[in-house]
Every structure is written in structure tokens, then in C-alpha cells.
Image (cartoon, rainbow over all chains, first blue to last red; front, side, top):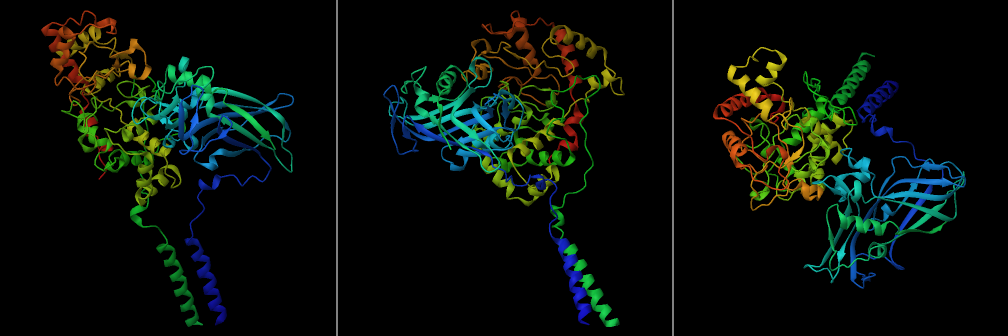
Amino acid sequence: MSRVYLLAILITILFGSSCQKRPDPISNTTPPANTKPALRLVFENKVGAQALVLNTKNYINENGDTFNVSAYKYYISNISLFTENNIEYKENESYHLINESDKNSKTFTIQNLPETAYTKIKFMIGVDSSRNVSGAQSGALAPDNGMFWDWNTGYIMAKIEGFSPQASIYPNNLGIHIGGFKGQYATQRWVTLTLPVKAIINSDKASTIHIISDISEWFKTPNKIDLSTLFVVGSEGIEAKTIADNYADMFSIDHVD
Amino acid sequence: MKKQLTILSSLFLASFTGIISCKPDPSFEPKVLAPIAFNVPQGWPQPFYNFNGNNKLTREGFELGRKLFYDPRLSRDNTVSCGSCHQQFSGFAQIDHPVSHGVDDLLGPRNSPALFNLNWHTSFMWDGGINHIENQPVAPIQNPVEMDETLDNVLNKLRSDATYRSMFKAAFGDETINTQRMSWAFTQFMGMMVSADSKYDKYKRGEAGGAMTTQELAGYDVYKQKCASCHKEPLFTDFTFRNNGLAVTSVNDSGRAHITQRADDLYKFKMPSLRNLKYTWPYMHDGRFNTLDQVLNHYTTGIIQSPTLDASLTSGIALTIQEKEDLLSFLNTLNDEAFTKNPLFAEPK
């Protein structure tokens, strides 16, 4: 008798388990967690020598204008690393949105780089023109990240929002959205930085490269910006290009560890 | 032993019933739908967009796009759908509305454009600001005078709806709902809207119902001489931006220049198709003309000179009364009644 019950229970369990959701063929395609050490990038946003603190801290630009920052976001794309022998390794699907108010966005790893020593890093500020003309994107490039112009297709490559008493129209807000991906008004800029010490990837560990972006560069060189006249940019054109020429050199390596 | 077997079989039955009860609510179960295909009409050029990239056309994706197109929950106050201003009986324009009403009855500056043969378009909107069909749907959703909703809110509304979750799964393999998949589904629905079954089309294909009258053929000749350089066959547009000499109104819509920031693009607008004009009135980017007579009179006697006026219009277009009548007769052969009544594109029941 008990054997029969045991059998019945077994059958129930067996058939009962078929009620469980079958593994989804598509969500199942995520690769297993990469356990190999991976190179890490950490972005730190500053204004000159000062740490960037959103909303509450005031800064002064090259022109002497006071401003604060409520939002600071930029795209980093097309990252590649160079070995001592100048061999270039590119990150696959390399699109990252750095958002000052989202701590997780400021650090990420680069998978599948060969185990060796690297001396240079190269990346694009902004999103390459190809992804600006290829239809609906996802992830960092999804249009719901607040970095996409829907009425004049194209990504906002970088933006600063905030406040400046010098901004000459009430309520004195700054809304500097830099975009434009083609021709003379393109606002993507390539950045190449030589590492002060080599970044190493081996079977035990991988280095972390600490990169600084300096907001004060947006307003400094080669074009000194007067916030009383330039405080809102909302489309491609000469103003966006002027700022892009400025932010082209806003990145530097803090250290590698 | 017999009793034991009874217990065994009843338990067996119970577990079997258990399997059935584990099935999801049948109302959410994706139905097996007839396949769907996108076909390029005979004699037409290859389209710019052909579902051969990441966005693969399926019946499930198309049906999801159709549901989204007619869903007012995509607007801020759940009152305005894409279909509100793009009505099938009006060639997916909005009849009798120079400009359409958004949420809170807000009005924009431009006439709701007709939607058909969109896969051949290389840009969208009257100013061509949108460079890809997949990027089009998010613009009216977020426009403050149209649907005025945030993409975050739209996604939350869709994600909280079991029917949508099931339809996204049927279309794309899992229940993930994001703007890319939403845009792809929209594109499957709108890209499928091919209008190529007018009398003119049947005439070109030598099909039954395509016999043109003498007057229609005379009008075809007038069209070829005086209209075809811009409104090119078979789509009846060359997709360029031109200033067709309309008087600038107090709205002072700069048109293409709004996108390019170039003075030589001032007051240029995207060339509309001449197909389905019977259903898509009023005409022009701001819907200023209610009738085709008014449109033709504009070209014969109403052209306003300006620095960006199209070179082909500096002297207007000379048309005799007879030529106008013939032309109107030909334009009438470009109306595709079947398209405006095709149940495939109607609001789902």
C-alpha cells in the first residue's frame, strides 16, 4: 500500500513539475557570468579641482559666472584599448551613458580584452553617426534616457542642466544640451589618453582606470563661454559645436590601480 | 489491488488536471495568427525599409503595432491615440481638420499627414526632422500638443497590462517591454500600410477595373507635363523639401529650416503624395486648402515669390480650365478605396 502511495506521490511530483514555467529560449541566451578578471573604468565628474555635487554647490566658470549643476550626463562610446605594441582592441557594442545622479552608471567593466598590458585608451564623447540613423535602439541608447531629440532625430551627446544668476532669462536655468551628429555641426569628439602606468589584465586580476571629466572645460578653451548669453542650447548648430570643441579635452586620467 | 489502482489512477488524473489548470488564462494565450508578408507592388522601386534588419515582420508584431496605434493610453490623459489624428477612412490623415487636437484640445501648427507607403520614405514629418521610420512613433507621443506623455509612463502602462505582456512575448519571444520593441511593433503595423490598389495602379498593371477614360488619360498627360517633376510616379512624391509659394502666415512656420538651421531651407516642406487626395483633405502643411480646386488655383495664380521659392514655380503653373478638369479627373484615379476599408488596418475589435 505504502509503495503505491509513494508511487502516486512520485507521479504527482513528476507531472506537477511540468507546471513550472519552462525556461524561456530567449531570456536564456544571456551568457554565464564572466568570472575572468575584466578591466574596469571609473568615471569621476569634477569642476576644476572640486568634486561635482549636484544642486547644492556653486561653482565659478572661467568668465566669472556663478553656476550650479542639477544634471550632468554624457555618452562614452567606441572604447578601445591599445597595447604597448599599439595593437588596438575594441569593446563590442560599446555604448555607455554616464549619469552623475546614477552611481552605477559611472563604473563598468570591459569584457573580452586579451590578457596583456595596455598603455592607451581611446573613446568617443557622444554617439557615432551610424547609431543616429539606424532606427530604434535599446539599452544606453534607448530614447527614454532623456538624451534623444525625437523631433530632429539624434542623440544629445552630453548635457548640463542647472542654474546661473547670470543666465539672462528668468528663471535663470541652464539647459545646455549638446547634439548634432553630421557635417560641420557634429558634436562627437574622439579622446585618446595615455595611461600614466600600464593597465594590466592577467588571469588573477585586472586594473581599474580612473577617468576624470572636468565640467569647467565646457566653458573655458578654446571658447570662453559667457553664461549671460549662452545658457540654453537645444538643437544642433554653431553653439553646440562651440561647446563640443570645448569639452573635447575635458577628460584626463586620474590614476590606474 | 483494484482499490490501489483506483487511488493511483485518480491521483494520476488529478495531476493531469493539474497540468491543465497550470495553463495561463486562455484570454491571454496568444492565438495562432495567419502569417503576414510585406510585398513590393509590381513596378515599384525597392523600399528604403524592408523588415530585413533587426525588426523582422511577424503577424504577432503587426497585431501588437495595431493595438498600440489605436490605444489612447499612450497619451498623457488616456484620450488620444495615434488613430485619433490618423483615421483609416481619411487615408490615415484627419479629414476636415487643418490641424488636429491633442490632449486638452491643444492645437499644433501642422496638418496631420496621411500614412501610407511609409517604407519608401527616407524622412518623416513635414520638416523631415525624423530620419528613420522606427524613430517616428515616439515623437507624437512626447509632443506637448499631441499626446504629451513620457516614454516612462507609456512603458509602465504597457507593462502593467497582462494582454500587452503576452503580446510582446508573442511578438518578440519574451515579456520584455521597451521603447525599441514598441517602436518595432509600430513600424510593422505602419510599414505594412501599402496603398497600391487605385484605378491608376490597376491601369498600370493591366488589371480589371483599370480602364481609364479619355478624360482621365488626358489628365494623366497634363500631370506628366506639369506635376510629375516633383510628384514622381509611382509614389507621387520625390520626398524632397520645397517651398511651393504659400503665403507665410502668422504661425511663421520655417519648415525644413527648423531642422537644418539653413536660410536656404526656409518655408520648405516635404513633398506630399498625390495618392488618396479624396480622403485626406484639407491640403498643405497647415491644411489651409479644403478643395483641390483651391490647390490648383494656388499653383496657377496664387504663388507668392520669395528667395526660397522652388525654381519650377517662379511663374506658377499654367493650366487651362480644361486641363484643370482633366487633371482632377486623373487625380481621382489615384484614390485607393480598398486601402481605406482594409480590415487589416482597422481598429482591433
